[in-house]
Length: 155
Image (cartoon, rainbow, N blue to C red; front, side, top):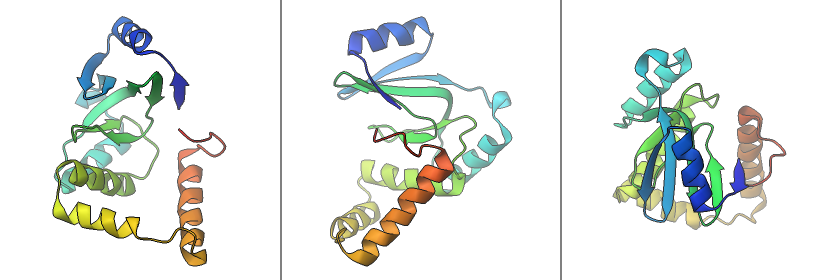
């Protein structure tokens, strides 16, 4: 979910909410870390899935990032510009898919050759090709149905 919000307003709001605030490059991020005893059962499994990729996510109750006068709230998981993964406690997205997806982003941030090769390969795909377009549509439809974001518009 995205909203217009100037940096100063974002920082004041997050400070008042008692969240951890960090500056990473042009971004400010804010989150409230979840204590392990408060992890939901699906979050416990998600942490295991992430660990299979060598990722130790920070589990949070909320996560927002602000840049360029815009704040975006994440309801699932996100890889920060520094390569740290933040996992929202109780996320409804499939953790197996989510962990693989974020592992790719971590790989790009760490300049892993395998992640870079995959990225370059995908860049060469002709999205106007009928078969490719069909599969991209199916992936998008499935994502929006599973996350409940259908009709929410672009972030």
